[in-house]
Amino acid sequence: MKLKIYSFAPLFLGGAIFLLCGCGTNSTSDNNDNVISSNISYYTLDDANGYDIRNRNVLHSTAYIAQMCYTKTIDKDNITHNPCFACHNKNIAPNYIFNNDTLQELYDFPSPALKNPFLNHFKDFSNAVVQISDETIQNYIQTSNYFDENNSIILAKKLQNLTPLWDDNDDGIWSGYIPDCYYNFDDEGFDKKTDGSYSGWRAFGYMPFLGTFWPTNGSTDDVLIRLNSSFMKLDENGSFNKEVYKLNLAIVEAMIKRKDVAIDTVDETRYGVDLDKNGELSSASIIKYKWDPKDGMLMYYIGYANELLKKEKLHIAAGLFPEGTEFLHSVRYIQADNNSSEISLSQRMKELRYAKKTMWLTYADLQNIGMAKIVKKDLDPDAIEGFRGNFESGLGNNLGWVYQGFIEDKNGNLRPQSYEETLNCMGCHSGITATVDSIFSFARKFDTQESFQQGWYHWSQKSLKGIAEMQYSDGRYEFSNYLRLNNSGDEFRENDEVITKFFLANGDFNQSAITILHNDISYLLYPSYKRAIKLNKAYKALVETQTFYNGKAAHILPFKNIYQKLEDLQSTGNEKYIIPE
Image 1 (cartoon, one colour):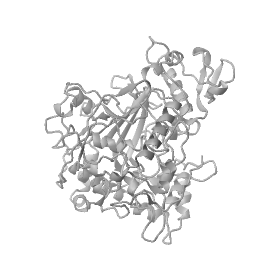
Image 2 (cartoon, rainbow, N blue to C red; image 1 turned 135 degrees about the horizontal axis):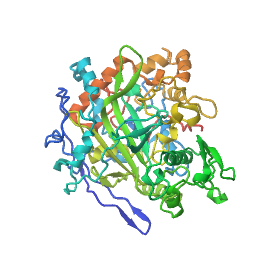
Image 3 (cartoon, helix red, strand yellow; image 1 turned 45 degrees about the vertical axis):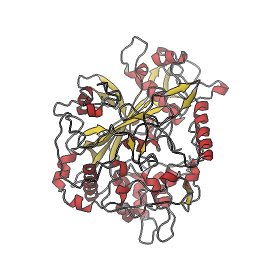
Image 4 (tube, rainbow, N blue to C red; image 1 turned 90 degrees about the vertical axis):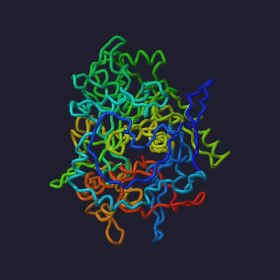
């Protein structure tokens, strides 16, 4: 049965936040036509290829529960695996997702979610993969669906000349994000437009999150950040000031990581802010993290953002991004070279994901929201989460952020994601403890003192090659720990290449492989050329079906290690395991 729900405008009364559901999308039938088209054109009425993103029917009302949460943690040999700890741990304020660590122990789903909705994972794509030649898929992924031949952004032109098929409220104007990043980076990671000016986007290198987003599991990706324009200028009437923007980004980094951040030496007297907290305005080469308002230890932005901070039109707090912060995340095919071991981002995008912090919520606000979720679940364990919004404006995650995305249509062009396709993103960005202010990547940005370009760079400028594995404070290695607890390199335990490389026949670690990993994470994260090509073909076969709402993990054969149906509060067989800091 399909659930029909409608979109509503945000509703705020007396400081209370009333959470309403948003609109949805319909289903489409499977289509096994695997003809690949490299056609890239501006919109026509056929762009949606029969997939009506305006339809407000939701096929899977619990699509916000991540597809990997249906993994069988106990295998046929009664061995227990724990990929769950990566996302579900003890919360650290202001992440007030309470009792999240219990999800390492139980499949604690509402009743409508007990039946696995991600039916694509049970499908066999091997015949479709065979029909696509290596040359065809290589040509396909090397063709950009973001830029046209004039280096103009295709989506921007489409959205500024809006087709009725993409106009949710029929006003002729796209009300969501219009892509404006040119992926043209200087030697500090700043994106520059075709006229040489700065777009405000800045790329950063980061330690990839555990499991799903490793290239060996099907995709390459990148992430960029942009603060609102007040952080980019010295005063209200000022123009773009690169030094001001760099310093404000460093201050945000210190607040998110809750640690000192190295900077190029700067004269503090220019800005009237004691950045290194030494008690005087002089030269500083560090943003000193000291924030405890109860003891009078405060942090400040510089320039015009500091003026707005004093007027309480902007805010600052540990573990929270300032309002107006944006993130841009492209997910791409795997560009592999048969003559080398290098992996890079393809020109073609699978998805373009966007997030913007539209509202400031205090620690108290976030704690109240977290407690309200606990009360709601206690009163009705089968209650379904509601997320306000629509495909045009994006979906609110109930924590101050709006998320929106674009995904490949059948012809390989980027189209807006439907409500349900975006709903699939919401659980990870609103209901787990692994994020910092709903974001995965920025807290994992490489530290400035130890990294290329102080950690501010795009993967096209430097790859993952030669990057050492991250260690916890107790000396254990992060990726090695994941391999040990999960006995595999992905949540589904379907990556035989990683298993063969890192585990012996008796299940023990291949210690020589682990030693290499400690010094070069690409040894784990990079797939072989053969695997990369197969995963690219498998995902393109999935694109042809346009059934992303049924799961979009690239695979050839049906998954063996997932449940079709779960029992209520079924045990995972795991005990809670908390990651050390």
